[in-house]
Image (cartoon, rainbow, N blue to C red; front, side):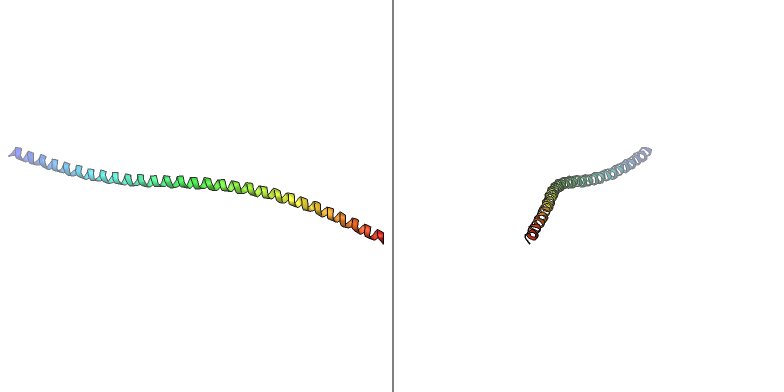
Length: 106
């Protein structure tokens, strides 16, 4: 009878152990599932960041081209202003010369 009680106690302990292992197995499965979800999320995040970096690189290139273009246009405008000022001086001298000629004739 003592042997039966001992075997019954050991059986109960084994059942508790099996139940505990089953719970731990479930927890581990949930953990694996959670880690898989986080891994997928991180992969998506990395992909999004790579796309963002590519987009920013393209925009940077466009901005550099725009700056170069604006610099060229600025240089052209400076030359145009310089030429216009030169023509203004030339026209002023021409007008003064014509006025002197006109008044010398009279």
